Image (cartoon, rainbow, N blue to C red; front, side, top):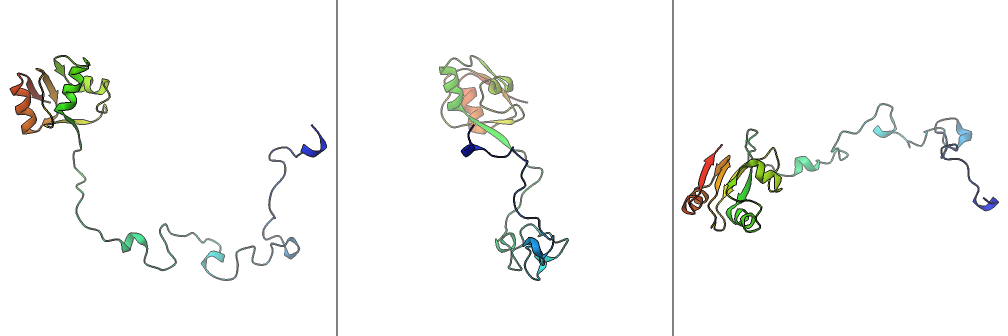
Length: 149
């Protein structure tokens, strides 16, 4: 420790001037709020999205369509992904939610739908929430079984 690197302890020195403590402080009078206007008043709080009276962005942007609050979101798993797992010897003959979660394909709370992209050569017994018609046909054509939860 030398004279050139001495400094006060962390938090012991307050930074900045004390506001609204008289003219002599340099921050008296308007207390650094400027003159007049909403921001100079006590109790002022800006509304979220307020743009000084200009039409706010959320009102300028056109809105359309409909969002169903009861919509069910399904995590899609394609047949080529299942075939890839069979080729890598991660799954053998049965596929259910636990196996898909263990392999990191879907989350533990997801609803799962098997989609028909790719081809399936392995005979698999698949138990999930939903199947597309093409996926179900491909699974049964390969000698497997598609069971809906």
